[in-house]
Image (cartoon, rainbow, N blue to C red; front, side, top):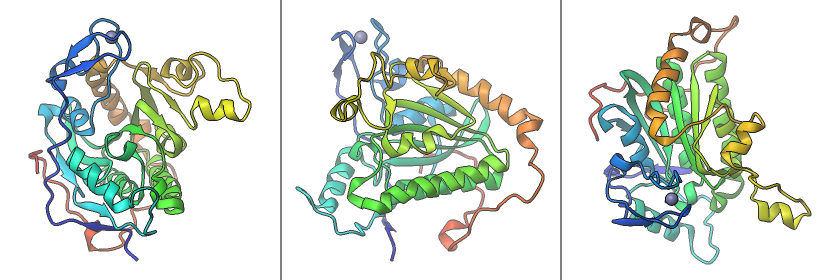
Length: 309
Ligand SMILES: [Zn+2]
């Protein structure tokens, strides 16, 4: 049984447009919100980092704002025929109409300061950036490409967790993605994550925390379940709980980096990791190769013209 299908059209670049103005949640200042590529949606008054959509993430991080996207047409087949207040297919259609995407993950080949990388950006506007069968398959394929071509893998996380409408099928994606990332690890191919607000649930419990270097944006909520759930079971989360700065203090993330310095930080970091002989040299013993299940998974090396498709 296929858990996802490939749509005919692959026009995915028209992501949800930002409004002309936004109100800063940090200081309530009204901000011009017209060009995320220019102001990066960081409040000039208080430094609050407003959310960026997945395509804007790639546009601001990758050289010339260009990339080659992969698997843009994959979409869920609603394997459980799930309905709560709204049928799952109806929710998918609404999310697609809002974001212009067919699932909550964009995977791409691009470059950062000239270094070719495999990248994945999660789109919170698509059903809370939830990780389902399709998103996990796209990330797994990105990891397989990174392994095949020995390119660094970069994942920008923004997710509420598992895609509940896919039930257990969604939960097992944590293991699937983690296994793919494990193969990268054993092959010493660099893997870096950027955790943005919010990174929670199944994503926080798997791929977000498995990187060689874990970067967080300032003030991002990062954790498994939220404080209200913890309070309901008798817990008393401290002030600043599950924020980037707290996680840095407790050793859960390696760096908290201002979005305006993120590209230059990643460029230096990826160059360092890529050039490191320790990282590049495989460990003793066999290195697992990507599983090639069918013809759609055997891609030729992506062309590096990096044009938008
Ligand atoms: Zn502000």
